[in-house]
Image (cartoon, rainbow, N blue to C red; front, top):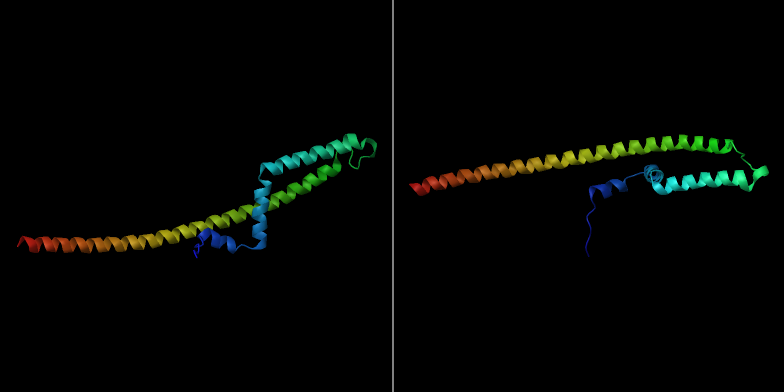
Length: 134
């Protein structure tokens, strides 16, 4: 039975709170073409229903005051969600930078060990050459 080792990214994703996951999902959703298309479609349908379909009995006639109110509330909410997502992205970048630093520090220690082993080997080779020459 093969057991896949979790990567750092998988481990980090497993520690996210429900709110952090929701912020990521909303950021990815609102920053997509399907969202933009759906939103434009919603506004066109709203305008069509209130302008032509209901004509005299429209719940939000032509200046679309209610639609403007909804759009203003959505813009305020989107601003807050995007700020949350930006904070999350900063936290992810900081965690990745720390992980990279830790990896580089470990690699540096290993490289220094290999260099010291190489120096010892070179000294041994020089001693062997000297003793072989005598």
